[in-house]
Image 1 (cartoon, helix red, strand yellow):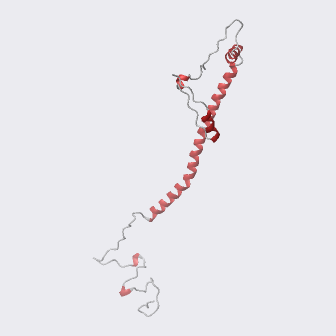
Image 2 (tube, helix red, strand yellow; image 1 turned 45 degrees about the vertical axis):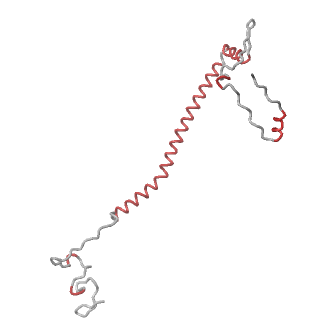
Image 3 (spheres, rainbow, N blue to C red; image 1 turned 135 degrees about the vertical axis):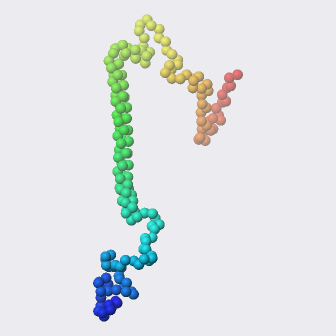
Length: 175
């Protein structure tokens, strides 16, 4: 510690203490400090290389924490919305299916519809009618629409299947 001029031990920043070479300490109140001499260098702050102040950094950290905190609940919320919409679509499809089955059940209450179904499915006819049985399926495609040639069977995989195909006669060609 430095001793004051009067020889006593002083504390730093008190009225009777002086710093080096007779200048007052910088820790004293501003009113007690002497004004800078004319032409003296003015103290400035160094530019911040990041461009962010301490407050801006704290604000960004808080915003990032909030974004991370709300990200998962928002994702769950959006997933639940999608599930709700899928369940609504499923309900609508089920309601349409139920309505179709109810319409079909109403048809079966009519005697004429039952007679028409029996005639179509079991080929029943009234007495005196000539039954005609189609050899094609009117609801499915014909062979011409499917393709002229049926697909060849796959070659056998087992040894006895290969042997049996060698023993079978060659199919006759249609010429």
